[in-house]
Length: 211
Image 1 (tube, rainbow, N blue to C red):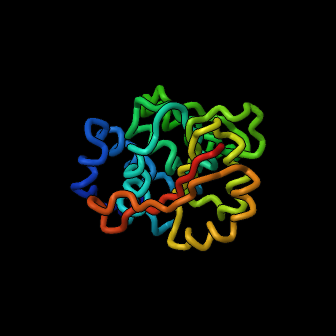
Image 2 (cartoon, rainbow, N blue to C red; image 1 turned 60 degrees about the vertical axis):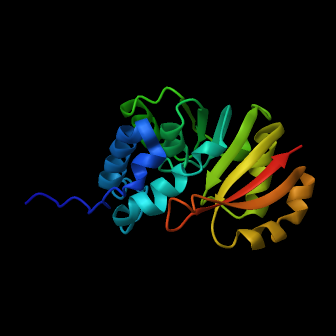
């Protein structure tokens, strides 16, 4: 008897609004991640049933915040890096991920989806030696700000941004990271709520400038 495929969440109507003319690529990515994500150790067993709302749209709704060249630290399953690359084909994304099996997945998806605005680099964020060359650096569900800021801020050019997808505890994280924010010249730190007009659970974003 064939093994049953995981139950993937139905695509919400708002997905086509958020992705626009890139919706077919988003659908293909959702199918692939929903079917193979658990077996490949990318997502947990409960995630296919909430894949669109909790993960894909949560990532995609912040796409308008980006421009230029962007690094995604700890890309994992491609959340948010691959999703952002789908939504914003005019922006260049460098996905930085240390784990070989995740790098293989990211490479396969970039090829299958014909994403020519994606570069995948196998390393930890703190191993980056290319200097502060990015217009923005992003990350999702990687670590608390006091750990993440020393990893991400050195990659950002003068005047560029940190745009980090965070959870409900972000205000406390900012308070706990005051020392790191000062040390790495991260200014104008704030929390923005993105997608409140589109999603039942909008996305919280830590946003700040690096000087």
